[in-house]
Amino acid sequence: MAAQTGPATPIGKQLAIGAVAWIVALLMFFPIIWMVMASFKTEVDAIATPPLFVYTPTLENYAAVNAQADYLKFVMNSVVISLGSTILCLALAVPCAFAMAFYPGPRTRGTLLWMLSTKMLPPVGVLVPIYLIGKQIGLLDTRTILIVLYTLMNLPIAVWMLYTFFKEVPKDIIEASRIDGASTWQVISVVLLPLVMPGIASTGLLSIILSWNEAFWSLNLSASNAAPLPAFIASFSAPQGLFWAKLSAASTMAIAPILIIGWLSQRQLVRGLTFGAVK
Amino acid sequence: MNKKAGGTAAPDRGVGGGIWTFPMIAPSVGLLLIWMVVPLALTLWFSFQRYNLLNPMIKGFAGFSNYVYLLRDPALYTALWTTVALVASVLIVTVVLGTLFAVLFNAQFPGRGVARVLVISPFFVMPTVAALIWKNLLMNPVNGLFAFLMRSVGLQAIDWFGSLPLTSVIIIVSWQWLPFAFLILLTAMQSLDEEQLEAAKLDGAGPFAVFFYIIVPHLKRATSVVIMIETIFLLSVFAEIYVTTSGGPGLATTNLAFLIYQRALLAFNVGGASAAGVIAIILANIVAAFLVRTVARNLD
Image (cartoon, rainbow over all chains, first blue to last red; front, top):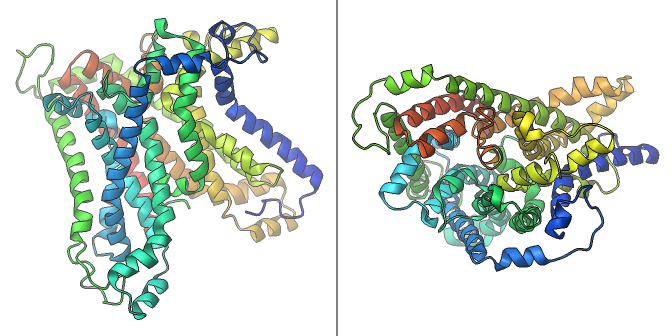
């Protein structure tokens, strides 16, 4: 964690670097700040020229979005789909990664790389068959099809991420507890689980983030019944539906939970996002 | 797969000695196999069929006619070019700025942790939100913040999506992916050997020499990972185009993903869309081959 300039960085230089870095950080974050600010404006204030930096804040947009009859449905769809697919994904990936990390066989390496390669299939390449299959078996515009797709979409990432976490568990601890006479189940539940729990948790968080924000399948396969928040926000793109303050309020609520999860888990995300290639 | 892999290993290896790992691995492998083979096979199959949802009377084997039609269609080449321009531009912006940001935010300064979190945040904003906020609140030519800023310094406001549609999409997508490049490169920066840097400085290396001869080579592998993973995702940019330009004006922002969507779900031309899908898959696989090789090298 030491700075690249070493511990002896003079305070003046630190402040200069800090000033530049903070300006960069605030510029990158600015669209989010501007959106949150607009969410507390009236519709008239939101489109005012020149733009208003000081205004009387109002909660009317939040009230209006929440009062919309179907808003809660979009939220519930997002919650059910991202949690459902994450639970399913972990249920499949944890045993798989566990077996691969602790009982590597001759085909483990090949299997892992093959799993990675399934992630390379561009969703748009298989849009047509997935759409037609969904239509055929009546799964279009259901939460089920999105849960299944997101599970499959995140499964290779989850297996890889968990695998790298499991690989880091010191083998000595396990052997020591076996010598002490612990049963296989005891080894797993008492020794192993506490060690790998943080890894499983951050894998779950990454899966929630990716499912919550997924837009390709949700825009193409869901309509009024199963549409999650990304599709709900997209409905604001229609010219007649364009209310900046309400768009901002709905957007703020849609991204807030994921932003917080992202802040909490950013360190662990790197290995999941790079398949363990960068740690 | 891996049947009794643990059984042949030494009994004191692993958690409980030899166990049968097949039931633990098979569900994931089986599902991914179905996920990979079935849609892929269907896409290939449809691409050789005359199949339009609007006209069920037209049916049968089409030979290569879908491909011939597609390859003769100038829209395909426009879309391919747009795809390449979009991917390449976003890659250049995110990798160059991401590297500079990684160096900057690796230095010590007050409030570093919070500042890093702010830079990473755009990555967690869902694509439809990012696109609509940029398009309206920032880039609107009349009421947007950018228009106001340009007018207040005496310039003419830019009609972003009217006159620079692809550039506008590139800016939005870059804003979303710059944090990804930054996060990965920053992580790689943190493993840079402190003593090597100090030694270089003692030898009289200036900041530019340090950057180009020590930092850039150190980040090489992380950079290649960033480039490949971003390419995979950027080839399929869709939602940002869907909510801002719908591929227009004309074909100005129609990338391959959007072209396939239009052919499939707007024109219901299953055969033609599938042929384009096969092209998208081939493109992605060329990139993927490199990625898998890089990751494989790291697996040992």
